[in-house]
Amino acid sequence: MINSLFQFITKKQIILYNKHRSTLPIVLNKKNHSKFYFWDIDLLWKFIPFKTSDKRKHIVMYIFLNIINPKYILSKNWISIRESLYKIWTSNHESSKFIVVQHGSYVGGVVTDIPHKFTKCDVFLTWGEYFVEQFNSYNSRKKVSIVKFGNPIFNNYNRDNYHYSNKRTNKILILPTALDKLNLEFFYSLINKLRELQFDITIKTHGKQGNSEKNSDGSPRFPKINNTDCLTGPLYPLLQNNDYDFIISDHSTSLLDAVFFKNKVIYFDPNNKVKGYTTNYSKYLVNLFEANLESLTKDDFYNLVSVEKQEQLLENMIFSGNNELSSIN
Image 1 (cartoon, rainbow, N blue to C red):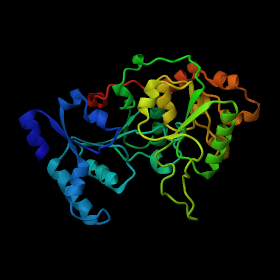
Image 2 (tube, one colour):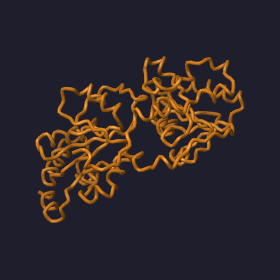
Image 3 (cartoon, helix red, strand yellow):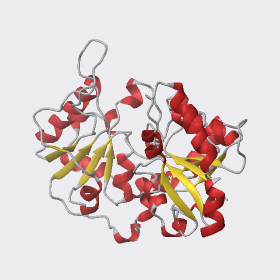
Image 4 (cartoon, rainbow, N blue to C red):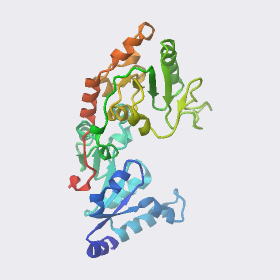
């Protein structure tokens, strides 16, 4: 077994990991490196010459796992066939564990997709107590350890270095999740109202907005947003600069990102009524969608901001961790 040999020679064990923005902070953590070697498992998959749909590819990977015998397999999900293989393998190798890292807040904290509710891993590293309680309720009969670990990306930042601003520049940022045609119409109504009040509007679009995905009728699944300034690229530099009077977001994880870096936020989520979601965000923040847009003044928008409430939301959903894997033992 390669892992046993490594452990004998170096006193370190092997972790195979899926390269993702949510796993890399754990992989790059110095204290973890003092105890483990991290190998990119995707490179192993690429080395196997069969197509993904070919069962032989998964048989060969199972053999590789037997040969390497990693201490942990670290991934961002348990949904795919590949990840199901990891769980099968660790079920037959009790000294190893398949670990999944939470990589989003779902729909404002509500898990609406059934495959995501039911864990298929040995350890699930959640962002905070809210998610621990939620996933424990879904998986009460399963042998899985659901851990309050913190958001691995947030864990790399010292939040004390950021400060709320009280400036009024008229500049605001709209930060939605990927919008389908119906939701986009709601956001157009919001944009028109903001323009009427002479706000300077910028939209940071989701990566899927305007892409090639189609509905069954051939129409764009996430249509391009027209007639407004749209930004692409990394989000965090925008949030760290804190250049906007406030940020408007829906049930996207980006709302938590904005709060983490101490931006003022307003919650605007049509899905609470249209699709019947009662998000965790709506338990703390006023949903602008439920207000009478036409009657709102410029001051009304500023008055919708509650730093106290958004801080309570963040505290409820996000634990401040250190990305050290020793915390899961």
